[in-house]
Image 1 (spheres, rainbow, N blue to C red):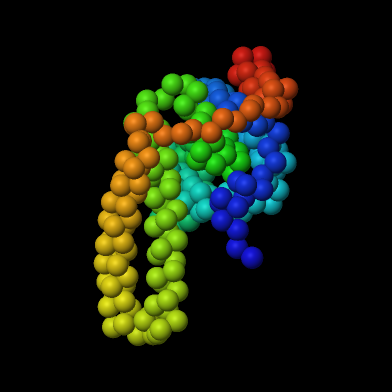
Image 2: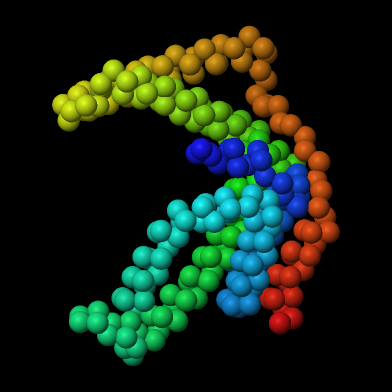
Length: 241
């Protein structure tokens, strides 16, 4: 059975809980992105990969497959176009020493950052993220925009799925001609429906005396020891090792 990202987030059991998780990820990103030490990249990747596997299991490996499908060809291109002394030559293509070194460094930094962000993406829902940012005194209009966009995307995807299923069951995609015609009708229907729902939502908010601040849930932080160990590993790799 196919699991969505939200399903994975809801079922996750992260060792670091609440807003603390967001703050740890932000601190880890700063430590990782502002250094050129390979030890930090390796430490960040290993630490947050372990945290992600502990939280979501094999879903972490499946999640990494999508960005890696873009990252690997990009690194190969970097190795090919960077000038330097050829190490491997194949017809008109050549991998240079500088190209391989740059690709390896870029790949390690990308994998480290990806591992840190994956832990956040797989374990933190948008309301939890917004709640953590709200504690940092994020402006109310930004909080409102984040929550409305999050809810709007959910509604739009649900409506699109229902319309696509209905059109497919009625043979709307059986031929190329029907494909274009049905796609046009579904898109137009979604546009009209989205405008109607937005107007209805605004009316409902005004009827409830909305004053410009979205309600943000409170979450308790936990796992301070794990968070301390994770950041200590990165600090040690940066300034001690």
